[in-house]
Each structure stands twice: as structure tokens, then as C-alpha cells.
Image 1: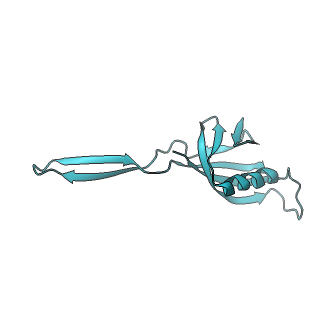
Image 2: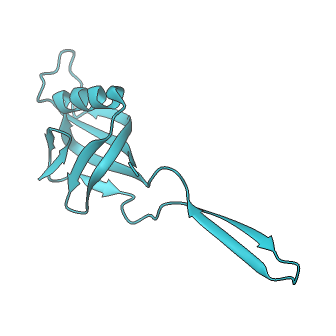
Image 3: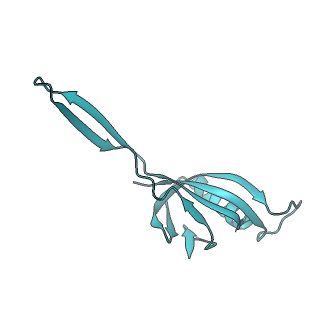
Length: 119
């Protein structure tokens, strides 16, 4: 089961970016003897992730995800590849399977939900 906050989603969603590593900033300082001293620290913010689904979102789910995004609070993502807190940063290219002037709440959509891992 895949869920984002309290929203249950299709089990067919792909989670992109889960194998990426968080960014690291490094700086090098040279000693008087000519030896480098390297300092490193992780960048603020976590990995960029994306939930991708061809026809696996519904109109109602996208509306509820948008409401979570507007609250600007981290939510729990439960996915077979990753479980943790994320910020919802956007909904990219939501497109209905078939155009309809007044789609019902369970009308299927393709979309990509962009996320940022909370750290």
C-alpha cells in the first residue's frame, strides 16, 4: 500500500529519485605545510523525489494532495522503496485519461507529484 499523509494511493506508482544521495558541500583549506584539509557537510534539505503514475491518480486524490501541499507541512510517505517524512513541492502535468467538462471525483489522471525529503 502506498500512502501520502492520510491519502491512500495506487500501488502502481513509481518513486523516482529514491536512489539519489543527498547533496554534500565540501571546502578545502590548505595548511602552511601545503596539505589539504577537506571539510564536508550535507546540504540542507533532503533528496528530490517524485511519485509518477500513468492513469493511477484520481481527481479527488490530486485535490487532496494540493491541499496538503498548500499547508506546507511535512507528511509521511509510505512506499515499498521509502518510508519517511516529505514536503510536497508540486503537482506536475496533471492530465485526465479522457477530457470531460465535469469529471467525477474518481476520474483517472496521470500526474507527477514532486517531493522533497524532510531532514
